[in-house]
Amino acid sequence: MDESNPPAIPPRQSSKRAAAESIEHLQARKKRLAKTIKVSKQKLTRNSSYDADYWLARSLIADDLIAKTRLERKISIQSLSEDSGERETWYKSEAAKDLLKREGVLHTEKRLFVKQAERLTCEKVPTKESRRWFMHFFTRSPNGLAVTGGRRDTSVQGNFRESLIKAQNAKHPNYAEEKSHWCPITCTWFHEELTTAAHIFPWKHGQETMTRIFGTEAEHEMFSVQNGLIMSTMAEARMDKGLFVIVPFANDESEAEVKAWHESSPKQYKLRVLDWTDKMMEGKIPGTDPKITWTELDGRELQFRSDHRPRARYLYYSYCVSMLRRSHHQGQHETILKDHLGRKFWGTPGAYLRQTYLLAFVEEIGAQDLLDGAEEGDENSEADPTALVIANEQIRSACRPRQDVSTIEWHKKAQP
Image (cartoon, rainbow, N blue to C red):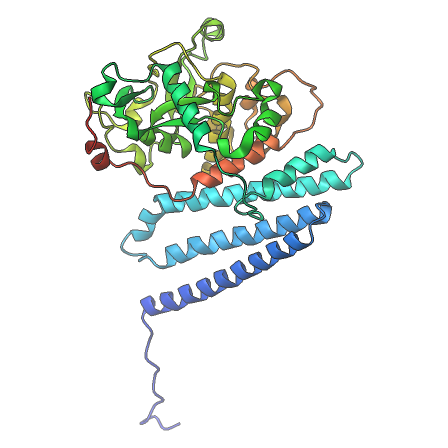
C-alpha cells in the first residue's frame, strides 16, 4: 500500500442523522405491523366461529398491538435529544403515561383472550350467554373488530340531566339570571354550559352489560339518577382519566365510624387524589374562593345541596377501574390501594360487587383488599372477567386525546 496516498476516510455521519435513519426504520416496522394487524382483523371478521382458535388469534393480534405501542414509544424517545434532558421530560409527560397505560390495557386483554380460549377447550364449557356477551363486547372494542354500536338518544340524555339537576337541587337560586349549576366535587357554581350529567357506570357499555354486572336491581338504572352526578366538565375530565376517585367519608381504622357510615342516610363522600403529578391537577379551580388547585381537593368532603346520592356500588366499580388503571401505570403491587399514610382509599367493606367479578380484578392487579367490597358467594367460585373487561375498555377510552375546558373558556361565562 502506498502510504503517501492513504485510502480516503468516509465522512462521519452526525449522531442526529443516524438517529433520523433509526426513526425511519422504526416507522417502517410500525407501518408493517399496522398492515399485519389490519389483515388479521379482516380474516377474523370473515371467519368468525368464536371458538378457542378465534380467541387465540385475538391474543396474537394483541401481541402485535403491544409491539406497535412499544414502537410508538421508541419513536417518540428517539426523536428527542438525550443530552438536553428532553427524554427525561418526555418520560414524565402525558403522552408517555398514556402509552404505558395503553400497553397495560393490551396485556390485560391478551390474558383475557387466552383465558377465554382455555374455557372453551376445558370440560366446563361456558354457557352460550357468556360466550355471546364476550363477543358482544369485544366486537365493539376499538382495538378489537371495531363493529359500530348504537348512539345515545339525546332526548334520553336530556331527561337524565334534568332529573339529576332536580334530584341534586343543582340549579342556582337565582337561575334566571345566573344560569349556573352546583358542582359537589369542586364545591362551587359553574355556568350550565360547563356542567354535565356524568354517568358513573358509562352509558356506552349499555344497559345489558350494566345488568349483567350489577344484577336485575340495575335493570333500568343506566339513565337513572342512581347512576349519575351533575358536575363541572373539568371535574368529569379528571375523574374519567382516573386522577381522583370518590370514596366514603369515613376512617377505615375506626370500626365504629365505618359502621356509622353504612347505617347513615344520606351517605357522605370525599375525594381522594390518585395522581399528584398529572399536569391537569396543577391548575387553579375556577370559581373557588380562595383559589385552590385540584390536588388540594384531596380528602375534602363532597358538598351536596340535597339528600340525593348515587348508589355506592357504582362508585365502588368506578374505584376498581381506577385501581386497575394505576396498576397499569405503576406495575402490579397491592400498595396502589393505600395512600402515603397507609390507609385504604376505600375504607368501608360492603357488598358492592359479585365476588367472582372482584376475583378477576384481584388476579390482574394482586390487590386482595378489593374483595372487601364483595357480595357473599362461593369461596371456590372462579373469577368472572366481565367487570374487568369493561374496566379495561374504559381505561383505553380515557387514553385517547381529550380536550379539557380551559380557564380562559370558563372566564367567558359569567360566574355567580
